[in-house]
Amino acid sequence: MDETSSGLRPEQRPGSWGAFRARCDAAPRADAARLLGEGGLVVIAPHPDDETFGASALLLEAARSGRAVGIVAVTDGDASHPNSRKVPGATLAEIRRAEQERAVAALGVGTARWLRLGLPDGAAKRSAGFAAAAEKIAAFCDEVGAGTLSAPHPDDPHIDHHAAAELAEAVLRLRPGLRLLFYPIWSMRLDDDAPYRSDGLLPFRVATDPEAKARATACHRSQLGEVVTDDPTGFTLPDFFLEAQSEPEEVHVWATRPGVPPGAEHFAALYADGGDPWEAQRSAYEVEKRADNRDQLERPHYRRGLDIGCGEGHLAAELVAAGKVAAMTGLDRDPSIVTRAERRYGADARLRFCAGALPADLPEGPFDCAIVSEVLYFLDATDIAATAGGLAGRLSPGADILVVSYLGPTDTPLSGREAHDLFVACFGRQVRTISRRARERYLAELLRFLPEAGAAPEGDGTSR
Image 1 (cartoon, rainbow, N blue to C red):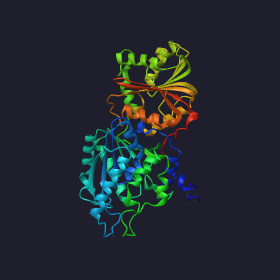
Image 2: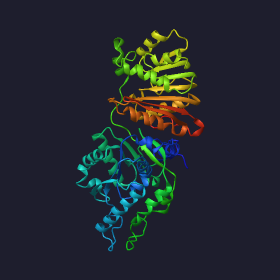
Image 3: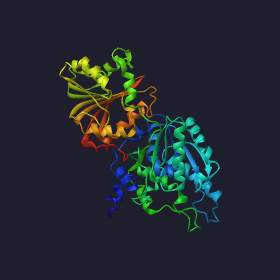
């Protein structure tokens, strides 16, 4: 491919479809369950069939795990064959609604709830009903008990796909506790140099079942040229598109959350004048959590550990004193809390503490043990991805990672559970869960780092 005047090929140009496509090709392989987290799933389909082509992996996982599922049908797809006399628009809409329900059932979700907005095919955003649609979808998410909302990527090339993405982002503003995952469908038609939103978006490859997807696709007979025979100008799914549906993976994109994580000044204020906002040394919660963390670390002895978000260093010191880890390095963002850790424990040569922000200031490895405790939700999604990538480069093969996440309110864009799931997902198949301890106020998951099992995380995960 010819280079552009800027010296970058289209697939290298930030903000282009080619650059994002390359990121998708190299994205971590994540479990659908990890991306969905807890709660039900609502999928926004601009047309009857988009849920089949874009979100089959999520729907199959919802069926497997028994989650509640809701489908938002933005339009009824009645404009796909506008010149047919035998099958007028109202009849085609009825046909396509039935096809969609059969397809979703073929993916194992026969009990899905439906919200049919009935907006005009090809003009959803220009219709009078568009203004109230986000509120309707938000209420529908409440009814379903949704934790995750899935919709087309904002630059997927169709006007109704753009409208569906805009609705999804409006719903996220109304229900900021939802996760939002985008799916591309027709983006494969774009030229590599076409503009494509990528800032803050993290793509993942998610396994689907091509046979189940094929059964669902076969339900959309009207789009396969099997129903309307008197409109040669009508739409039929092209062969190249249908061939792409046989791939064993789909791309699902973690979307940007509203809000900004707290900055350095927030922590400086918390720790000013010797402040201990979490009563880290003496509170029953912290003492019991540290004991639980020590117990969960599976191996009797580690050579060199890293404690990310070490605070005053209590856990690092306890692990060394117990002989669990030969030496520990602690990292925390606020210099004053690191000074306090050094003052309390710095006389022990086995302990080292340093101040620095994630992801840029991760200490050099290698480490065979890493603890990431109640710190991830203070980051945005791109910094979480970069932290995963940076940590992967500092771990020895077979290292253990203990991720501990607070489950209560955080007043940050990402909740503790969301940040936890995103962090683990960014390792792809490089990690295997050894144990999970779900306590009342926190989740602790022990992972084993097995880099030979999968490709490396994609670093900072964004082209911002």
